[in-house]
Length: 331
Image (cartoon, rainbow, N blue to C red; front, side, top):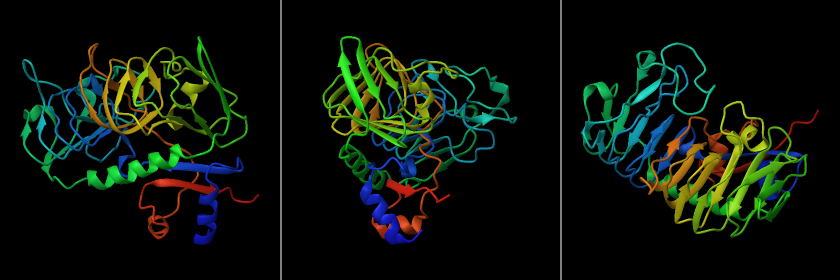
């Protein structure tokens, strides 16, 4: 596809259902949690974790990474302390030693520790941990450019927030019902300041990408937000790997329930005792008044439509992060 054609398609954004789109999280792709500040607590992180500040406590990371993964499970720009109240706490893993599907269930893994690979750590400051808590450790504070990533992801969030709605929604005392048009490859729901609780999804085609824009500054996810099992068949659960809650104005986020979908909240400080099955991009993560948040393995995947080469992104001025709309190939 010629560059001029790609630019023309981008200008259409989400407007036409005959197009397939992908939202690229750039360097944050493939991480369960990607934070620009400190991470002070979590129940555990089933996939990979990136921290732009310090990791101040220990918990398990990476035990659901896919078989054969070679990327580091933990990347921290600052200091790492795998400790708790009573001493060493948590381990860094890198998925199973045998070729099994680690994403067949949700929550604590049935994989025994003896069958897990030790995960690698990249850190920039100091490392406080015992040898048995990780595989290898490399000191490299510039492994991820968190400042550039924040600029790019902030731009992406603003871009998504400006998209026109594709679909409709209604609110009642029972909660929110998001209704798609049944045919679009991308559905956009602009919810304004409506509370994010008891959400259901209907009339959305299989494989569609879903952007849920909220302008709330203090966000609380509560109530029913889709099935909490790997095999759940409700629409939110079936689309969990391609849903984005875009919280462009959020300063605080509390995940108090099981949440299907990724959260893009670049400037938010996050707490919660629930489970997020997606990619969480935020400023920080801490213990909340009711417990610690668990981050699942099934990260944001978006569309299966191929994306342009990195050189094309650069020519368009979008870097590695942006919203790309590509026409389907003609039959």
